[in-house]
Amino acid sequence: MNSLGFDKSESNTKVVVAMSGGVDSSVAAVMLKKQGYDVIGITLKLYNNSNVSKDKSCCAGIDIEDAKNVAEKNGFKHIVLDYQDKFFDGVINNFVDSYSNGETPLPCVKCNQTVKFKDLLNEAKKIGADALATGHYAIRKGSLNNASLHKAKDFSKDQSFFLFATLQEQLNYVRFPLGDFKKSEIRQLAKKYNLSVSEKPDSQDICFVTSDSYRDLIKNLNPGVIKKGIIYDIENNILGTHDGISNYTIGQRKGIGISGSKESLYVIDINKDQNSITLGTKEKLKKNVINFKNINWLGGNIVPKGLDCSAKIRSTQEDLPGILDINSDHGTFTFVNELDNTSPGQACVFYKNDQLLGGGWITT
Image (cartoon, rainbow, N blue to C red; front, side, top):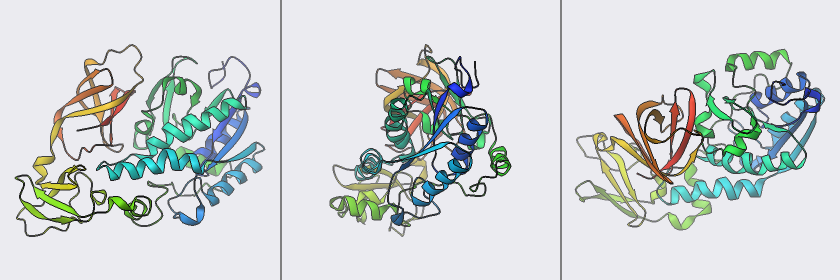
């Protein structure tokens, strides 16, 4: 078996590497090439670079050139695919719709779920690749047909949270060469390989927002959602008006436009049907039961009924203990301790030790 789990030589194993133009995917591609694999780098053009902030972008103009440069200098083929329409339909539209419905979206998950692990994965299969590799910090374990997903060695950079929607058949096909490395080690490898991107800063969310505020994007693509409504307190008293529910997220404290309260007020509810916002104290945000839907299960034969495990609702937070109950496509996770800032449209992702069991989209 080679390092990717195939019973053949590296030179006879074709691997497509998704190259965003950043240091992680570049190192992944060059690492596999140096191990002897038949590597093809593919970069997706996702939007027009002239409309994207250079310090936040990935898969735009300059990133495509960076990926192309890495491939040329290291002797493997590089392909650019124009996925602007696919990215708009699968990610940007969802982003706008989610905010328009009073939710808080997770565009990185949607990008992995649609463009990368659906469209790009199918493209890799079309050209006869044995696997699709990415620069994600996560670990894949298991066979060609029954893989499992685990946290990366570098917990501070672990990206398994953003991969929870990966289907089992997709996980069987995908590889994560960087999962056993720390970020500092990848930077060192980039210098060792003499990559032009070795000092390139990491891309940041949200990569496709073209100004200081996501609100401009929503206003341009769905101007009808920007309409005034009522701001209430928890006793239904009117506190003021807002300029559109898409301007707010659950847990927001700043920029609400309401003053005079003795205590700090937070957005605790967004009602799309009534076009209203409800404010309350931080205490009103706290809950320990999270409801979710559209579950993707990667836990194999583990029974998700009264399961003692852990979960988290933010990629950057530590997963916390609780009880998982899934009934068909809906479920609940009951945390031992209360959380705040849970928002519809975000994800609840479950773990058993370092194994990702799956996740669902939060409803309440």
